[in-house]
Amino acid sequence: SDIVDGDLSSEIKVTVNVNTQVLGDTHQVKYEVTDTAGNTVSSTLTVSVVDTTTPTITIAEASPYVVEAGSVFVAPTATASDIVDGDLSSEIKVTVNVDTQIPGDMYYVNYEVTDTDGNASNRTLSVKVVDSLPPQITLTGEAVVTIDLGSWYQEPGFIAVDAVDGQVGVSVQSDFVPTRYGQYTVTYRSVDGAGNVSTVNRYIHTYVEAGGDYIGMDLFGADLSDADLKETKFLGSY
Image 1 (tube, rainbow, N blue to C red):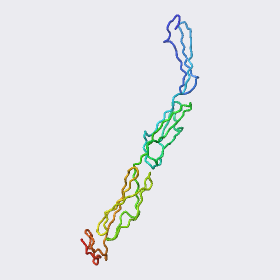
Image 2: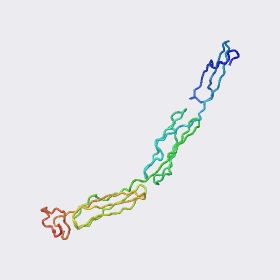
Image 3: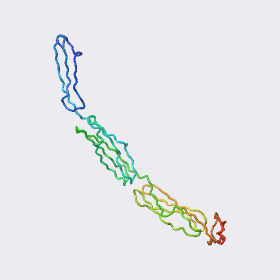
Image 4: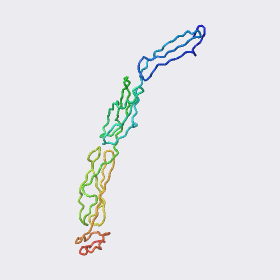
């Protein structure tokens, strides 16, 4: 205001010399006004630019992050940005607390970053380890076995291994009848501690050969027209 001109607020010239990307108290805003008589007055405001804003961390995955038990855990990627320092992704410190050998939802990955002004930010990703895969059953020998009618089936062997429980038991069932011609199935079944079930089949095919003794056996379905079987004893049912 002026004693003659009164309110001169609308005539004030404002000169701003502030760069918010540069920290410090060297910034100024100058206010200047001149009355109708040419009298000029100015006032300067010192501006201090400070950085109190924490960086922003963005994690590529959402919580809870689900991983399979027994797998190799790799922490999801994350990015960090700061209003002054820009991209701080390479400065992120990652702390992993995950054991994929033990299913559960108590695990986490912590991401932390600090900007050059000391403002720290952290985010935590919760991790859940689940056991959803069944044991892996491996058969010794061929998946299809051919044996002479009347012979007993000799089991070649098997093993079941689970990613969490290690070696687990296997139950074996079969409809095989050694004296009846046909095709049969041997079923191997395994269950892990989480209740995941796996089954694998082996198949038995019986055959008849020239000179064989098949008296009293069930030959229904066998092809007995081969000339090579003319000396074979077939006093069974067919």
